[in-house]
Image 1 (cartoon, helix red, strand yellow):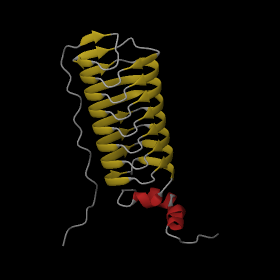
Image 2 (cartoon, rainbow, N blue to C red; image 1 turned 180 degrees about the vertical axis):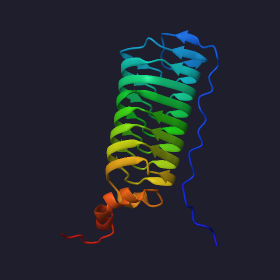
Image 3 (cartoon, helix red, strand yellow; image 1 turned 135 degrees about the horizontal axis):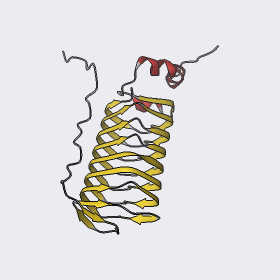
Image 4 (cartoon, rainbow, N blue to C red; image 1 turned 90 degrees about the horizontal axis):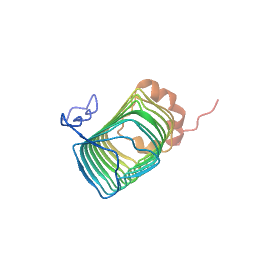
Length: 219
């Protein structure tokens, strides 16, 4: 008989591997190939779409739109970014840490994240529709809405996070640890099959779970 799991597998996180010396860059553009750089002094609308950025640090910045559509980020640390839009559609992030800051919209449609950490970030709207996330950790983050329709999540965990609403329609998860996510509502409770909740969360959403199973709750 196969033993039942008593806890989900934890995300396998590798922090960004950055060299001791980085070349300062103040002008970035799309379709670039950037290695061992420190990007700073950016503002307004910034585009690194379809670029390859590796072993890099993005200094604290305040931008309107940071467009990383189709970009490949490997071993990148992003510190205290403030952005109206952070666009990462169709991009690949590996060994990336986003720490601090405030992002109104983080658009990761069809993104591929592997060994990614968001720590202490306030994101009003996090969209990861149809995205593939493996070994991803969210720590002390605040979300208004998390959109995960048709997303695939493997070894994804939350610690000390809050969200008003989580759209889970069509979500597929393996070792998905939601125990550290205080969410007011999940859109599709059937999609949480196999995910991990703690007893307090299960109690909070008990009526919604019952209704999803066709149980009439009165009184």
